[in-house]
Length: 243
Picture (cartoon, rainbow, N blue to C red):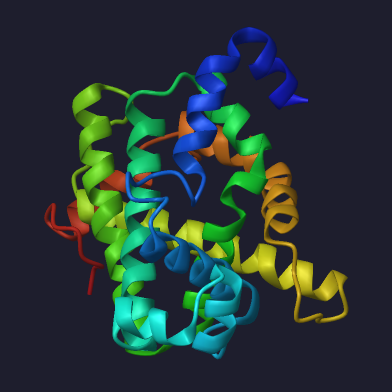
């Protein structure tokens, strides 16, 4: 197991990685009632979708529905806070992974998919929900990806791009597709059950695509630059499709 290897080689580094990506351990206010409600909402919305009511969230958090309203004003206010927290957690974790973690730490974190379960479930539900809120959520992911990729370029771990925002959008589209496939395959395996194990689904899709994905990331796909050269010539160097 990758995790066992990570722990043998340096359990303190791996433990730091897992603390960073755990949905309950990024902010300094995690022991507050507001943070407890937020975490309960992320987990509940990830399991049941956004049709879940505030009463269920309150029960999960061990508080009254009135206290949820006191802290967030409404279900929309709670959803906005969850969106912001999930996006921030992804951004901070990706930045750490791409600029400061060792390859051993990254692989170890991937193998412990349980640490990502609540985030994964929430992102999938946000995407399946559709509509303007989901579109805004995706745009936030793209903007954050452009930011952490820029930091990775500065740190020397990622190559520069002629179109940094376009590359960020492409990578988010790839990631989103992978998450949705993982969710749909898990549902199919359970007979379209309303309860899908996010960690298990994520682990399975990672194991099936991680090696080829790393090959593409590391070596690229094509053997020559002819297609890229032709595209640049046809668009006069601009990142738009030829007429």
